[in-house]
Length: 134
Length: 134
Length: 134
Image 1 (cartoon, each protein chain N blue to C red):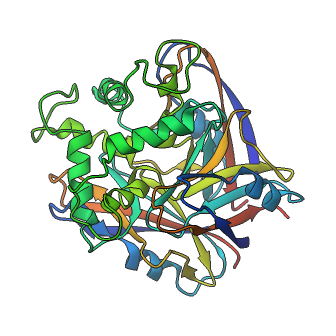
Image 2 (image 1 turned 180 degrees about the horizontal axis):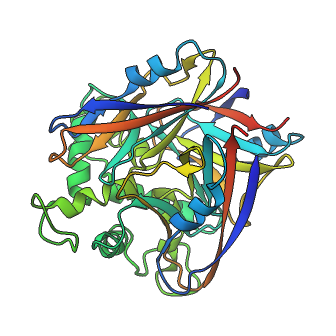
């Protein structure tokens, strides 16, 4: 297995497109599976369309499902931070993608998105691993 | 790795049972992991019991969590289509299953279900891949 | 691939920490992927922080999203049991983790948690599988 820890500048953005980083990591390989893993407790990975309004819609859905108010037992840092810690239970931080001849076999409208609602951490890591033929 | 793209007639159904197709793909293999991936931006994969009312319950839960109304920034096609694009953020389009001696090691009450709320696409694809001993 | 079925006493607890069992299973191996799978239809796997209030918060979120009342078509056993059968559609029973030199590469605040809201089954199984270099 080949593995690599990618450093990201996420700033205060909730959504960061990982598609290009994953395509670069897989380029030149043969057939196999690419595993994407976020080693943080307030983030997840979504496979979805970007740039057509759906990121804005997901932004709102997250706040509807996990409102940023004082209801959480986990309370420290920013207001509503307890909500951040529920995100990975709903949007898993682990994702597997199929790779064929070094190409990530995503559908036309699919991007891989890091979902991280915790604006207090502007730098994040993602671990990419490839297991397959070589 | 062995991989295959399966063509499905999903019609306007929200739920399509993939269990038999996955069992057939794995039959005759040895030990390994079967990866299931939907290359579409409005669909996900659930492992759940079918035929006991839970599909009807999931149908309603999806509409409760992501109501089909005019709230979405992503708006084109059928009314509430923006909701379809949020489904894969909650129900991931990527799933890994354990395989032992060519048998998919699901529990007694588990089926693998394609969840696709977008009734405008009656034909769908699912990619099955096997990585393991051979 | 190496695989093992782990028996758990979950009692009536909704959350059971699997981190130590997974670390033990992976210890002494090389680089690869560890697959965790729950062969039950009312359970899922979350990667999250434990012991800081977030388990209590997830407990409440599950009941907010899937209230334990009479709304379900799947109805038998305890009141609200239909809700248990929706849990795996939202919190998947399948999870893949990266392993490096026999160490599970979780982040500092991440634990692997079996989420099982069905209090009627005090004993559960989890299948652990390792695929990688050896």
